[in-house]
Length: 170
Image (cartoon, rainbow, N blue to C red):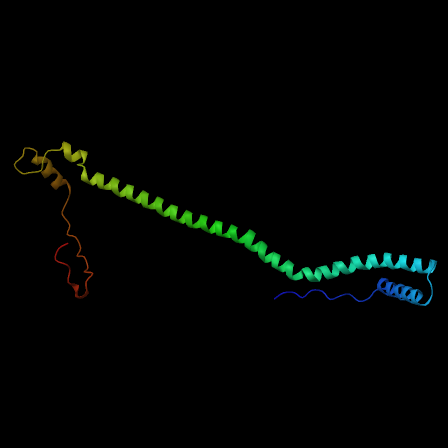
């Protein structure tokens, strides 16, 4: 809601003096031929009129410019503030997309590194003898089995399907 402009001020002594001098000037000019008193009244009218004119021009100017001032403020908002907010929004969206791309790249490279580790034979299995029973190095397999301790059964895995039916094979 717009604030209404200020009302016109009441007449001050300066305004009343101007009206008195103007009335006297008009009476003198209509009734009698004016000489020095008419010239003095005209001079006072001009001086007082300039002062009042400046005062009322300022007041009327404020009243006329009040809607324009509000429009200019809205225009300044659209010209100055809104583009800055839009630029900040674009930067935030770009940063969000960039961090997503970086995270995706880091995840992909880590998965590729782990897949390469799983695909390549480990150095210990490459240098150890095979674990078949008829090879001469089967003592390593026996020593691993005896040092490992008893074999513990794994607990049953609950079925994700209703009714407890687990899938036959993956």
